[in-house]
Length: 81
Ligand code: SF4
Image (cartoon, rainbow, N blue to C red):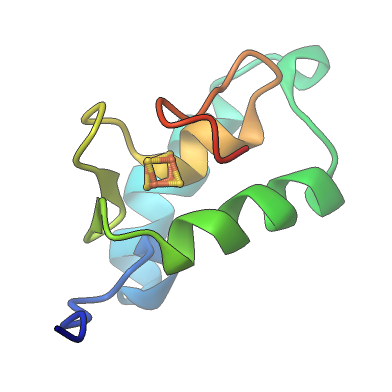
């Protein structure tokens, strides 16, 4: 059965919606707690392909994956990254 995409990541939402939820959330974190953009991008690549993602939220843990993927302490509950 093929996956029906309903905007996999919040990046796919309007700029205003995205900035309010993700950018402000990440900006609120200390810089030393964040991973590089390269690591974040690799992590989000797994999320984009995952059947647990729904509108930027991981159905396995309930988090906004883009915020979780940006942090050093962030982990995938299914150990995909
Ligand atoms: S954090 Fe893991 S389980 Fe959740 S959407 Fe991303 S890859 Fe899938």
